[in-house]
Image (cartoon, rainbow, N blue to C red; front, side):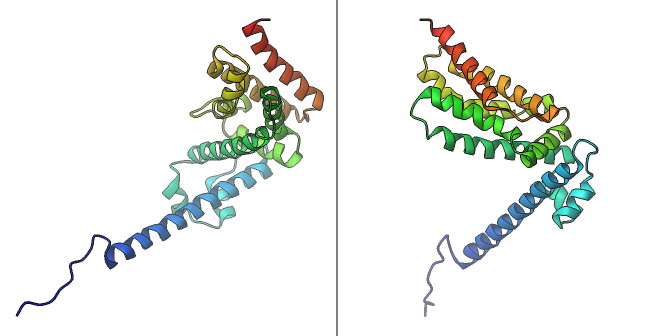
Length: 217
């Protein structure tokens, strides 16, 4: 007599249990990475530009082990690079939100400039940004070099406004604008000087005048 059986589907109980385990592990690892990023940022801010924290300092602040650190990062340099990228992504999200409030390309460019320079307007944000950049090497090299460079990521937000303004090469113009503005931000951070409204206005006029001269009267 033939036994009555039901064929197992490709998504049987074993598959589902294994998938849940993988998802749980992935969430746990993501939590570890976030803890390391946040702890490193805080420790670097506390050390400022006087000293560079050790991996042991970062691990202790995160409440994790050396094993957890090296599970995700080959070295402290790799962690610093991840912090730079994480900060750039957060800043890009903020800038995109602010630029979306403006109906004109000129307004979007000004919001972009204002948002980039805002990294030096708040004491805590400025101290953290400077410390991370200093740990990445030097202020200029850490913020302008890649891959991907912070300036390069920020430049993508200027492509559309520059194209709308009539730029013949919006990608290049946006890249030059981003590097110039981020370089100016680095100067403010290093000198511990807060950008003023006049600084925002001047840089905005400079960036817009570049496109105006390009397309002519």
